[in-house]
Image (tube, rainbow, N blue to C red; front, top):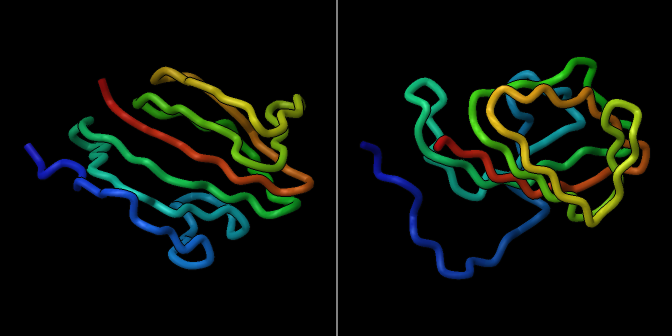
Length: 117
């Protein structure tokens, strides 16, 4: 079994640094991983991250993964399959749930938690 996530006691976040494009995403969608011991090969662990979509960002295909995903729209708006959602909005998706494609005209900031049972 892995080390697990670290104990972090209220660490200040620099929301201007530490962003990266997740694999398979367009350049105008970036993540800031807060903690992760998610192992998609072994199907264990969890990940907590922010996902930022710049104004005009979009994806062209639906996503599906084998772990749970909880998403909270912190700010902005997101259009999912043509339906608009504005902050504050929450979604909880079980493994195997197809979701997307996504688009945002104004941009948005998401807080996400991914985990295996």
